[in-house]
Image (tube, rainbow, N blue to C red; front, side):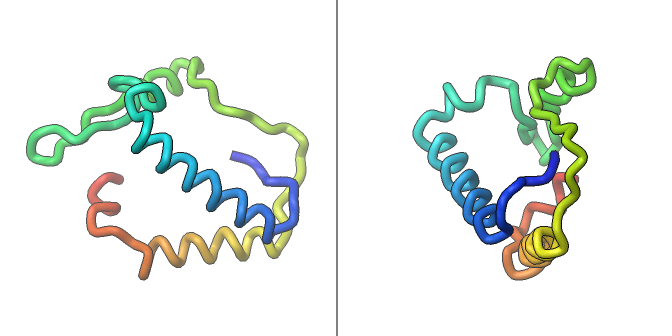
Length: 101
């Protein structure tokens, strides 16, 4: 991933908006939004079954945006990123998140 070239406050709003949109699409259009076998799944006993995206990524066919503009995040953008990291690793953590790494 690269740098979001906008004010940190606007970047934070954009990220939260994308998360909401992702959740909406996943709930309302799950079969169209996430095709079968695309993402990792949980099998019996909690075993992770790797999704198709992993092999696509490894073979170079995963369509992930790339940025080559050379810009670096501002100190304020880094602070916001760190704030999210702290939140999702403390009060915003969910019980299962560490079982999937």
